[in-house]
Length: 174
Image (cartoon, rainbow, N blue to C red; front, side):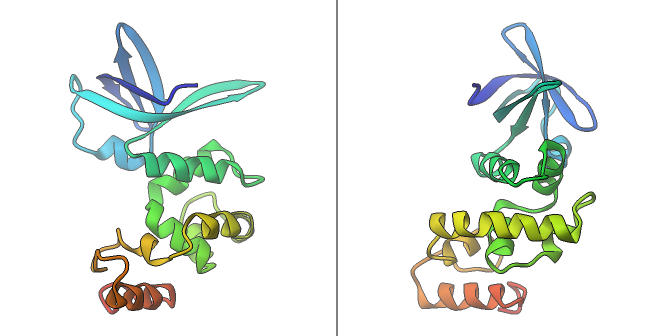
């Protein structure tokens, strides 16, 4: 329904922004990183949004990047994962690391997030692995945003580093 909201940041709370868009204040639930970012009250801001509607609730969830929004929406497709758990995951893992964790079946990357247990982590991997594999057939594309990984996605060095990262080495070690 709403692709994004662009307006003045009227107020920050522990888990949301109040964004004034032409005199209407929208409460938008955001990841923890967005709340702690350098956005000052009174500053213009743009957040990419997902309008969540169920019988008993309606809420706007917002993200500073389209990649975070896409990750949130992918997580919502997993049975048993709702918007609060999805938002917690977006707060604790970057979209690049998320994709690599799913493709390498690294359940521990997800269980570090409060509220995500081993079974939920395994369900996330099971239900999203094929989707992410179709979107990113060249896994080095996912590793490009990780620190220490060369940016030329087609290079042999980049492919080697991506492979080592997927095997569990840190990007620094790779």
